[in-house]
Length: 315
Image 1 (cartoon, helix red, strand yellow):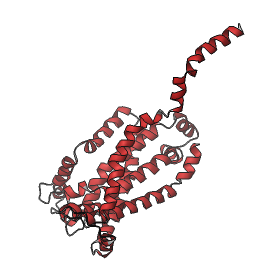
Image 2: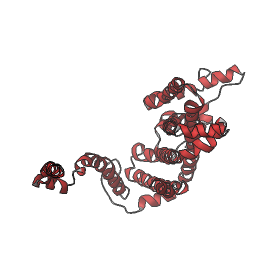
Image 3: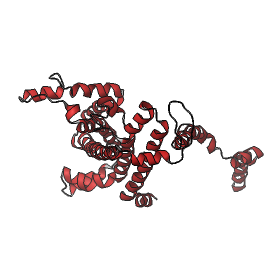
Image 4: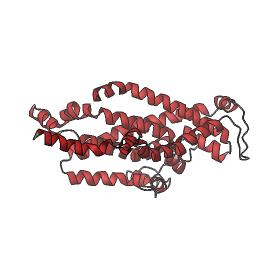
């Protein structure tokens, strides 16, 4: 009986030892699946980065002539009188908007997945909050332009008039606060979805055990849910920081960076220099400095969140 089983096993293994199968084993077939994505990354990421890096060392203008000038653009960047104000605007904008994106996104996730017990209610609320992210940026910006309209027909001014207060020119008097709210409200939806998925993945037994030990809902959040959200918190914080450093479309659509550069951030300044002023080389240099700053900030965040220690715990 044993001999028959071994003979049958050899018969099944025999086709696996053919020259064709041995060739397939040696050939790295996984590269066939990775090749399309690698091509996309090289064509749409590495090549533009290299071209932008080369462009930063040129004095290209609307004439589109590649004249290499060395570090002239970076010297011009250090001597630019607007750079301190632009850097300050960027710091205020990124830090304040990031706080809304992470903290308010976490609040929305806890509210709709843990405190609201009916799943349909939480799902409907998250769906409604995602609408601005699913709509084109122009539509979302037009909504805020109407809300901050300086006349009595703007939504915020209607609310002020209900309390007997005069209308305000929100985008002129409070441009930074306006763009922080515009980007914060739409950015909170990203954190809400990530944190909601992470909370739903927590085993129910952990929460039940905490409730048996006498923990309140806030106690469950403090001692069970938040400690298990280290990965999502690190991801959302790092991702949103890098995204805010590079974003400018809502600022361009709502305030155009004004008035007097009061709401103009680093990425928008690079956009204006490159495409509005035609200083492509200088705009590329400003963008490359921003990339270097973003890399340093990302590494610092990974260090603060203990990325290496988290990786060791996952092994």
